[in-house]
Amino acid sequence: MIDFAKRTRVMGRSIKLGHCICNPKEPCPCDLFKRKNVCLCAGEREDDAAEDAPLTQFVENAGCASKISQEDLKKALTGLPRVFDSRVLVSADTCDDAGVFRLSDTLALVQTVDVFTPCVDDAYLFGQIAAANSVSDVYAMGGRPLTALSIVAFPIEKLSPRVMNRMLQGGIDKLREAGTVVVGGHSIKDKEIKFGFAVTGVVHPKKIITNAAARPGDALILTKPLGTGAICFAAQIGKAEPAWRAAIGRSMAALNRASAEVMIAAGVRCATDVTGFGLAGHLGEIAAQSGVTAEVWAGKIPVFGGVLDLLRKGIISGAVERNRESAARRVERESGVGEEFENLLYDPQTSGGLLMCVPEKKAAGVLAKLKARGAKRAAIIGRIVGKSEGKILLKRGSR
Image (cartoon, rainbow, N blue to C red; front, side):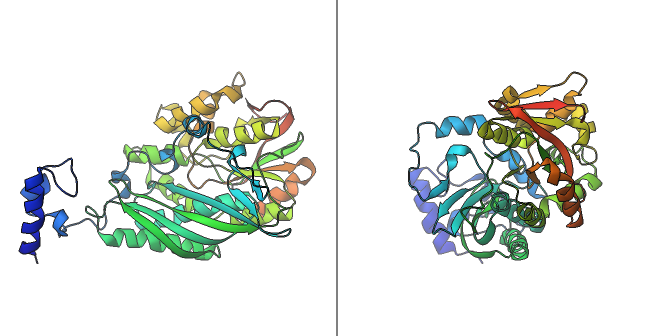
């Protein structure tokens, strides 16, 4: 029922000010009040608030494509104070996946946060993907995630609270699968949906896996196919097959936990996860921080069905262009390698796989164990070939 006394009090104040008190950009009465006799400022809600609306309709850029580009981010961080506390073992200085803080000689905290817009339309699945993506940074550092705090931005006045509930339930269920406990969170109103988690994990200080330890002779192993960004963008413009969308949904919701356990057991010292900056962006940081050249074999990269055709047809998101601007200076494409493969390197991944630098003599064994633990599309996609200031050579195949 409408509380007319409350409506009169609130709207009277807005009319007197000449601005809606909930949204000063709007007059009072606002367009919604004129159309539906609903005053949001008075706590009223639309009876037909959507409970099953496709979530990607509420965003401009889907998933990790919504992130600020590497280049712009580095400019924004320029000149900020550096961390000189000796307990900080890994900071933002190396553009690694998470920060690491030493508590004792045998225990360190791994801390990360990841938030992005919906990349799928189903709220529960989006929650699972957001959670899997958030804990992936801890796995990439060789850590074990323990606790998480949810972060939600949500158009509560347009969508039913039940939608937000399903997002949270999906995230909680996926984190439970990871052995991680959600201990609280924070929410704000926003026109776009955004969701993710701040995650805290633990690692032994002498067993941290970083992006700065690649060595010539290492094989590059990628544990999930590429192309989630291309298919998400194609879905937004009505050009993605249902089977493609289902395939990336399963992959994005899959934890990197088992792959990380194989990686840790093998004694891998250098790795990252492949997310919003694309393979070129994340591998480029490995190359730069380690001072090496990475060779990537186009024909060996695992790719989701439909992706290369989408790229050949020019169905390429703006996020690909942003990633190209940031990473292209490191990339050299061999003659005969199609442009679609270079665009694939820049494609922003959401909840992508781990990228490991594995000593060559261990690579075949690690790959076999990854496949046995569920990473069926894992592949050796290249190698570290020498020292440099940080380059990526995109070639047709291994020699």
